[in-house]
Length: 604
Image (cartoon, rainbow, N blue to C red; front, side, top):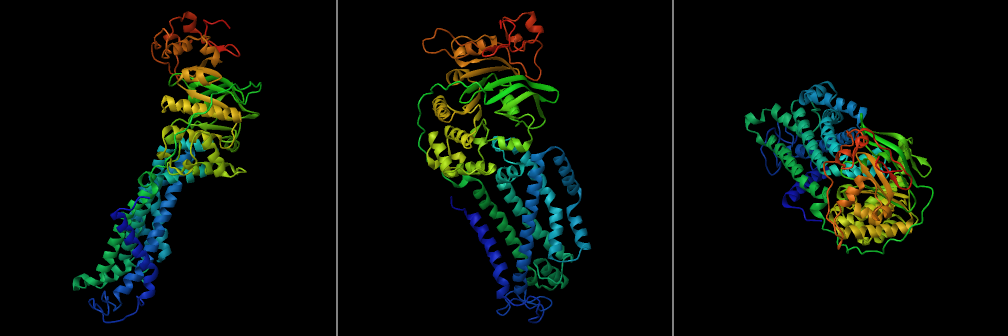
């Protein structure tokens, strides 16, 4: 880890010094309440900080007051930050009625004037440390809850949160393990600020006489100094030591923020782990066809309110097969699959026919059943590997939490199982200890695939996993995936914009346009010139020509139709040069079995 800078070292030193004084100091000084000399004696060799108006030793009072003041300050800061973090994160992540109720409660507390409320509550409760802590906690947590809620609202749609849901983690674990650690810097700053505020508020209330004046704290020290008119008589030593202690603790807590930043952000303190270049594996071999599909979606509809964005989606995936989904951006590929897996957040609604994973029906299954399914029966490799991996967890910790979420312990052990998968995907076992940001894009994608296969899921859904990779790394990754698919016989749903890629690696291809399947056929049929829908033909014509091929790439004219508001009739007809009046008036159905087409111009 990188060495701490000067400011961090100073902050830690100050805080550790005062913690040492709080723990050991009272054992080394006399009683703070005993009259040891004449009142208001200036500092001397016998009494280093002099005496106060009651003849008590100011050094003893300052040292003993450190313990109670720091105890209340750090305790209140910790509890206030913890309550605010849990309440705010839970409210934002669950959403709905829970979020509305908690937000209303937070806002009610926030509209109340803080300091007057503290003064009023403290004035009517029995004085003492417990009362002081309770009052400060009661009035301090809402602000932190609101800040954390706002941050979680920006994080809950990140890919690594979606991946956590995809492996079946319950909401409380996602909040505790996925969300709050990524707010470490924010929570650290909140803890420092809340502790400093608590110390200041405690000292202020006791200075006003609202604390337990019989106790010895920094606040009561200042109260008695003011009560004795020390400033008027020039007895500066009765209040200056306490004032300097408060100022130094504030400086120390502020500088400690640098240490928390280094600790909470791996980019600041950890060098990149070296890992060898992945090696390519053998080419794909044929996988025998199986009659019963491992994953079957029938007539699936997805809507946002009154707007349907996916209609009548129907595909089947056999064990060991690869199904590719292709189409322009906004065609509904990812929405359809995430809807089938019940992973779309509100306000999306999923309905229609059925989604069967083996013998299990997903659309009617409760959330508790889905948590067991996600990760074990079907795994998701989301788009964007860097955002899909939790940045504050090492790669090995991602595997550990995946197994822990399902209560599974591999016979060979989690680490051994994870390292074997990493090696099969061309990665060094040293990647186990690496941070996500230290890996290249191709290495991160391999990690995601390994995580998806960790629990031996029979179906792997890959949502544009090679978008950010160059062609060489893309081909290496897919060859490694297909090698594992041959070995483990899992099915793959591959979502991409790259039709040429699917023609090379997929068994079957589904072409989507404006939220509907317009053609579904074996990849070999499309690659061999058997495409029949004008949109599919347009996508093929837009591919770059192969070396020696006598043609030029030709784009499809016009702009893609919106799935939420498609034109009447065939959604593709405004861009189709062959469209007739029937195409403009009547929406075609998807007709056919092994090769299905939704086009009036094509005979069944």
